[in-house]
Length: 128
Image (cartoon, rainbow, N blue to C red; front, side, top):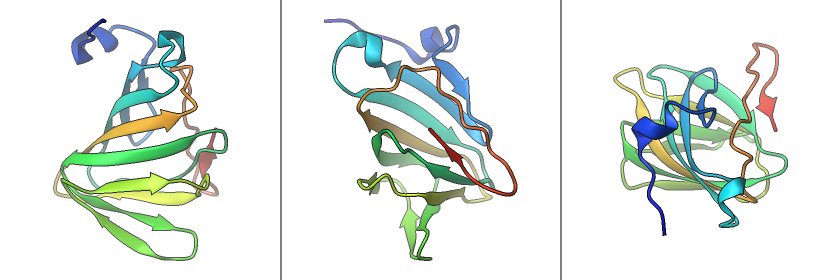
C-alpha cells in the first residue's frame, strides 16, 4: 500500500501543464497498477481539441462545469457527478465554462508514463 499527495506530485515531473490546464498524474505506469489516475484541471473558458490514440480515458467531474463535444457535433454537458468516457479513442473538444475551472478525476488505460504533454494548436488538436 502507498499514498500520494497532490502537493508531492507538484514537485515532480508528473505535474504537467498541458496547455489549457494541469494534470497531477497521481498513479502512473511505474506504479504497476495497469491504469493511470489524474487530478485534471481544465482552465475556465478554455477549449481544447484532444484525442488519445493509445489510451482509453474516463473523466469524472468533481467541480466546475463545461462540455465535451464529439466530432459529429454532439455536445454533452459536464458538471459535478457526470462521467464521460472516451471508449473509442474519440477525438473531441473539451470546454470549461467561463465561470470557473472544471476539475476532473481522469483514468487512463493502458497507463500513462506520466510525463506526456499535449501540443495544442489553432489548426488542429493534440493527440498522444
